Image 1 (cartoon, rainbow, N blue to C red):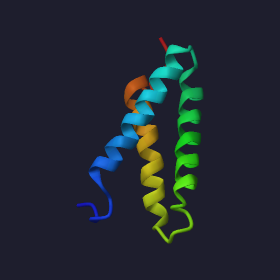
Image 2 (cartoon, rainbow, N blue to C red; image 1 turned 180 degrees about the vertical axis):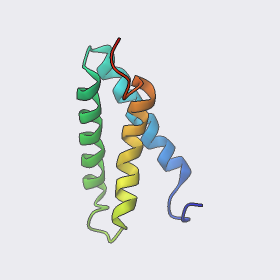
Image 3 (cartoon, helix red, strand yellow; image 1 turned 180 degrees about the horizontal axis):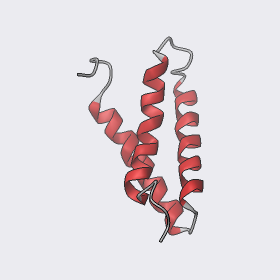
Length: 84
């Protein structure tokens, strides 16, 4: 069970944005590893913009949110399977 301050809707939004960005990058022909690195960079930048790092939020919560971006990309691109 998740703590009350972790919103399932918020986490699903992170997954959706990660998947949408992954779809765009894959459509443009980016390799899967490059897509995952880009998604992680966007997730980290997003968390820095929200200032979760400095508001006293637990560190693992920030990691969960960044991981949700990556999860969306992984689900959409089929990572870590190799390209066919």
